[in-house]
Length: 368
Image 1 (cartoon, rainbow, N blue to C red):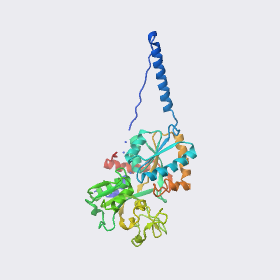
Image 2 (cartoon, rainbow, N blue to C red; image 1 turned 180 degrees about the vertical axis):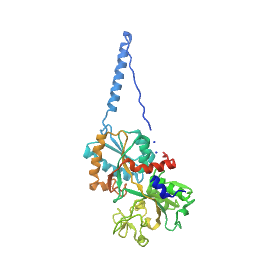
Image 3 (tube, one colour; image 1 turned 120 degrees about the vertical axis):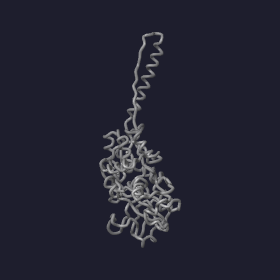
Image 4 (cartoon, rainbow, N blue to C red; image 1 turned 180 degrees about the horizontal axis):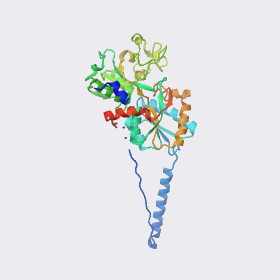
């Protein structure tokens, strides 16, 4: 069997149509039907005019706001609140109107972008981008940066006292994951298990990364999968040669900060999915550990619908870069309770070709 690392080298990360119609008009010289004909023609003209007016409402106008879509990877109320902050800032900068929403799943977000190709922008993970791009031509603009990293990882979490210490120990065990459309929470772990010859037992679709973490914490699953971002260290930067978890001698000190905004272990700051549940489970670090992490995955994206007007897109891109330099960014998508983007970088479609190869390799399609 090919090794996972080799798979990532060949493949480090495939979906809607539109219809149109025509119309024709006829006239009659029969004076007995002149009034009816005139009325019919008038109604047809009025209907056509109305349809034309609606179709021509400019993208970003009050009648045709730009749909800002976020995948439900964390608490939807947090996403909506932070998304509105972003939308207000973008409106102030561009004069455009925005409508924030969180579809019910990763797949539903893709559906919405393809169904509304000229007025949607979506903050979607790499896998979601690949599927949306290959399905209907959704186009990437930016990728997330988190504390200097433009990549992230999948993490496998187990209870500290579970006795599970190796991947092989997970065979037949109950697995909690966020969503089948999640790159780090489902797709990458699925490939890791396949390469290791592991077949999980019962599965739990928790609905978000934080919920998958809590499933392990509460004993509802033997192990869970979620996103991993490296911890912030007091001296130097974390690298892949280091253990992914906080040093054992600091675990007892781990707790939310006084204002509840951070999960700290001494001078270390936890940034992986466990941090998102620090309020619900202040002792999460004492109860749940990282078993292992995956090879790196390209970061999530901001992408636009395939027919999004280029001039409007350019305005939004400029405004978004400017917004990323403000303090309000940290109250929006930059919040660690939201998506934790500390910055953004321009992204290109080719960066996600390896994800496409993995999708093709496993024949993945999203579920509703």
